[in-house]
Image (cartoon, rainbow, N blue to C red):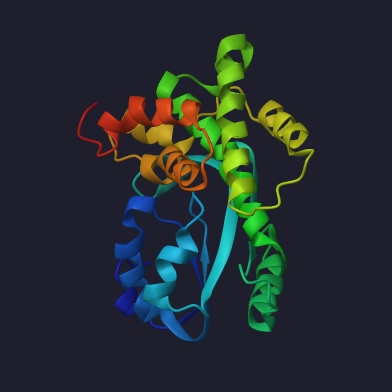
Length: 249
């Protein structure tokens, strides 16, 4: 184990999972890990990781990914898995076949990693983004767990308003989110453990910088770009903006 990528050399797969504010810096540090057949799977929040990393690492190596896992950092080097699932979806945003990636996915499956090669990763990314835009905004701005939010009619209503605004923005941006997606969101929210807090809420409590600009801030920015009203997301962004640099606790 090392924290110096130059000591490792080229690898087959990089799981790129840093916080969104560190994307470009970590991208530069990833360069020594790349060989001719390497692939970098982004497992970050938000919707623009591939777009931000491709100019640094190259279009060919970049693979979009999502991860579905609830964890906290117990202490440096120790991750506490607090949820019931830990799965990865990955694939090329341009939807073209990638035999090299497919081979790596099969090898990871053989190693008991719950990973799926997905043809329409843009849809997968936005489905997660919609869910996270609600859970991150609500658990961070209220400082409450999802169970308490679900039990209160007003907070629950706001949670779903946040997600529905993101759905509207995604559709305006050309993402083919299904008509029955609202039902899927209901199931997802119900399935989360009551103690669940999104990572942005945990970062807020720890005094760390927030991924706010790439979550609520991104929804607001895209809403303005495409002429979609996002008043709930704008409120969350304004409430949390003083804490986004992690300087105020």
